[in-house]
Length: 146
Image 1 (cartoon, rainbow, N blue to C red):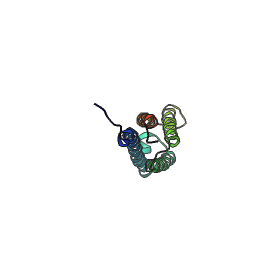
Image 2 (image 1 turned 90 degrees about the vertical axis):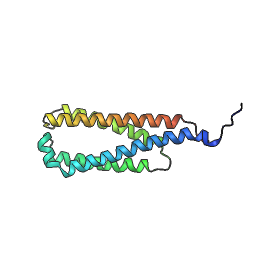
Image 3 (image 1 turned 120 degrees about the vertical axis):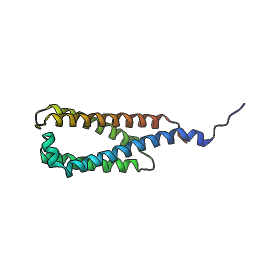
Image 4 (image 1 turned 60 degrees about the horizontal axis):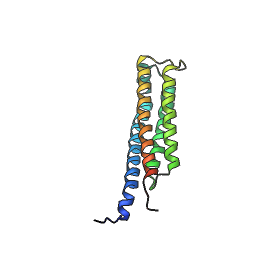
């Protein structure tokens, strides 16, 4: 039996890999936006529960809203540039490290719940970074229609 390799069969792995990466970017964008809005809108109550100063919570929330917008923009590109995907992976990894440092350094007087809050954030961002790295690797390794 002979099988012909059609163009759609060759492009499918690349399309699926890009679809996976795009999905992870969109979910990351949505969850980051929600967390940013919560940090800004509930900075006072969240601050008293976590020990996080209101100004820090608001600034962190605005940073997350901006990051969410960037993620949504990248996810909306017709073709996701690998350099941008790499940047997202690196920035997420740095944010995870930043959350861990914030949880254990004494420059912000976090309460027990605040430490847990930051560590959970670090874990979530690490998972997104790993998924995005996986999507990037698949996208680069997949055969394209060239």
